[in-house]
Figure 1 (spheres, rainbow, N blue to C red):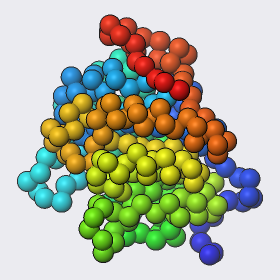
Figure 2: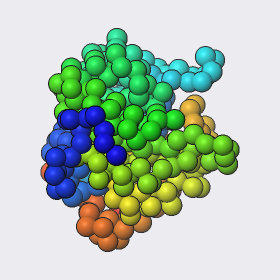
Figure 3: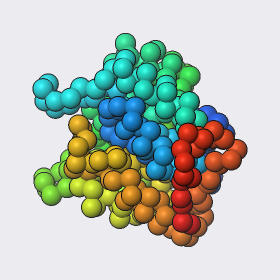
Length: 297
């Protein structure tokens, strides 16, 4: 397939880009990039619970959106500025990069003050003015595949960003719409393999939005790493059933830890690794807690 994308496609078979984020954290290198957290920022205590439970350093970034694109105008739309204040506080605690979504050109400048990675959601993959705007940002961009987008359309959306000056794009496969209603979407792992062959950009997977059911998420996450994904972005919540957004697909913090514990052997089998940079990068992250995070790998 010939794609009219000069900046996104590989020049050689070995051509790979590693996106530098913050605190020596990268996406696209040997270490898996794993972002975790709730779908939406709700309270400071909610985010503190996530930081307390998860193994910082294995988790490379915290996710949490303050703007929420919702199908219904009556659904929770996010905390906006209040949510940014919570993210600012939790970043001081965790010392980890923050991933948050932007939905309009007007939101980009303010979000860039608080976030280290700006996410373009599935519904906005072909919002070309937004792509141009984040292309002028100096923040890494996590670009999610549109729910009905072809691989070529996905790559060209990334090309929009890069052609406007920002080479730091992370592609995210999050499932595409199909006729089957059992899962929320169909996780296209074939696209992950194809994207890694066609482009030099890192490719991560969002099994939460693909599955829509928490019991399916761990196996899909493991399959994503096995087929070559550079990382994962996964929804987890201290009390998933009480989540104000996408409650059905969020893992409990305990299940999230179990999933992380299961990734080490798969990562090694495909020449990747989990990296614990706790001592080097988040020296004060646990000082407010009485017990250290536990990781059994």
